[in-house]
Length: 123
Image 1 (cartoon, rainbow, N blue to C red):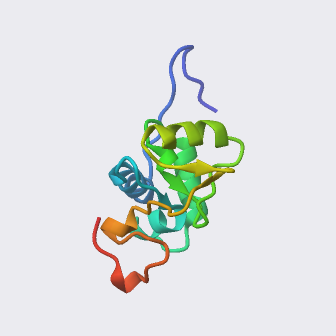
Image 2: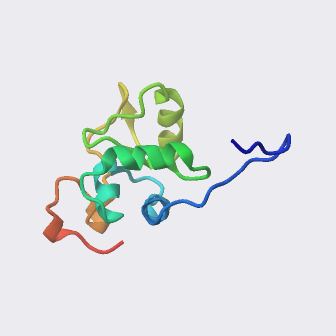
């Protein structure tokens, strides 16, 4: 295993999917949320919601707080910070979930997890 000198990090180049996930997540506007499944679909891998979570866990500087489960649930173990970040953008949060009506990004862009793939728009 290669070790970096103290104070340095080794940053590996990500996959094309990782780059697309990061692009999609960065395009979610403040005050809106998207489901992991919608991000996966927009990134070209429908059904890869868990992979989206893994990409986000490894990435820095993403507005990760704008991504929630399809039920609006916040990231387990990070609910307090997640809620604070969303509230700072005007999103209502209650009991570890985005409060209804959930401000799905898809209402404007077609990424609403309740929309069919045929009704989606390009990001």
